[in-house]
Length: 351
Image (tube, rainbow, N blue to C red; front, side):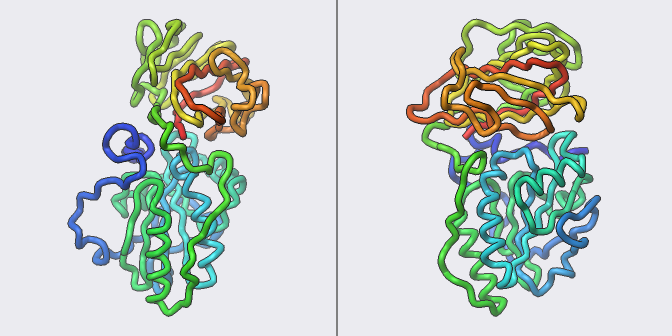
């Protein structure tokens, strides 16, 4: 059983929260400071550390970070986690990442290990593939930060991106309470690629899932057919935030899987960045693709996973940054064409 997909990223443009504001917390206001840090038991593996538990961490200030490696909202928090680790580790801070998967391929431990190495994460990581720690914290969101004092009490929590100065101020306060001298300045991490903060002024397209369980705004003629092989076509014109499949696809619960080479996905979007979670159905088989904006090569608007001609390769299961626009941002038609069969298309995110 996977956790509820109540993602902060998905909620940002749904009206549940403002673009920059936190999730509404419904618990009693005196809850923080009273609840003890739950156990960290049940992880299938630990990375960068021996197994840790709440009692092992007593006497230290702890930041618990719930994440999953395809989450763009978490990716944009990662530079701050790295910077806090570098600045405060010698002052008694311990960051513990809890990797709780969303998609099926995120249960693969070697896949998580590859992403930890690629993202240069050196703090302890619990692989929470059975959702034991997620449930112990009664957590519901990626990303979620819990700040815990040296006595083991949860003193602050943050769901979603942003409020980094507020979180850092609380970290400094908890470290001082623990007897540590800390510099009052705040970190200013370098950000680039997928870790660059979202362009909120131009972000008008929400996170969009492709699998039938959560898909919205699907515009291919005839609608979706769950768990059935179908040939789909797209309308000549898509409305803003509509998307469509073209070609021979099977739409599964989490993803649409391409059965025959030459299939495409089209999306009418309005954002600086377009990211897409992709996975080869057979891990050893890479899938070639090309991307287009308004029918043309990206011509300088390509993301880090695409060359100047719009070409790229799905070599592993992860999030791919396909578009980063410069200058004026407007509504545009994105298309990705897969030159090989056997790719799973999971989730669009924007920034």
